[in-house]
Length: 145
Image 1 (tube, rainbow, N blue to C red):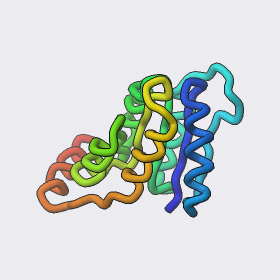
Image 2: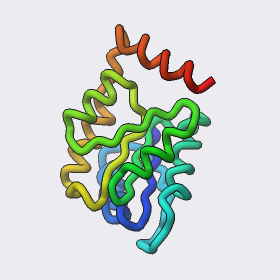
Image 3: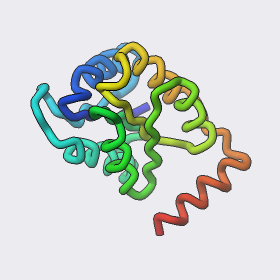
């Protein structure tokens, strides 16, 4: 699976940690930046992952800013992106099963990197259940037109 990841300065350390863990697990990881921990604006990096999802270049995205809220708002502006702010494995599981979320966002100032990894694993390994949930996701897709 091809996974894109990006952050702002507040999420940089978690981004680097997750990137290494993902590579060790065999995921193809594209790091959309930043390359160094410096003050940056989260939309500049969230847009890169969201556009890549929207264009079908990557299958899943991971975005980290201070709270995860700004990255979630940014990503959800793009057609075909269903970004979910998840601070627990339970939310990540339901975001995948019920909403077919393809981007997960975290707050770098909210959760520990180890928890972010546990949430990421659930997010990447959980399939979309379809069924009654597909009808609802299709209604969301219609809003994009």
